[in-house]
Image (cartoon, rainbow, N blue to C red; front, side, top):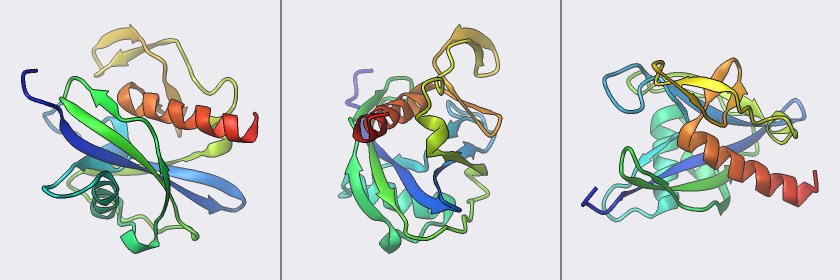
Length: 172
């Protein structure tokens, strides 16, 4: 790429349901494009003049219907360079103090799945066996299995960084 990467951000949104801390991921709608049908965090590219937090909150509202003012931003992770789509993505960590009723945007989101934090921080949460990248190319890629969906690539790497931070905080 000769162009500098485009800024974007995603929201890792924590909420508690029945004593379990969860976070939503979206399964992208199927379309002709680099990220068709992939599992990702709500998020997208920055609009002019937005910072990473504003982008993450706006995109989460557009994609999954989360009311922006209700999200308490508690931190951010390392910027992540997504080389295939030439993005530099900032993961923002936020929390809601109630169980959200998600409203997926039918154009962008096929469905919303929720990961339990306790499942993510287990020692054996990251799988290393072969997956079919893009449904076509067999490769060994670290990934998570959430509600039967394979989470890999940039999303899995961001999720793993989040997982390591949480494991460190709670000395798991």
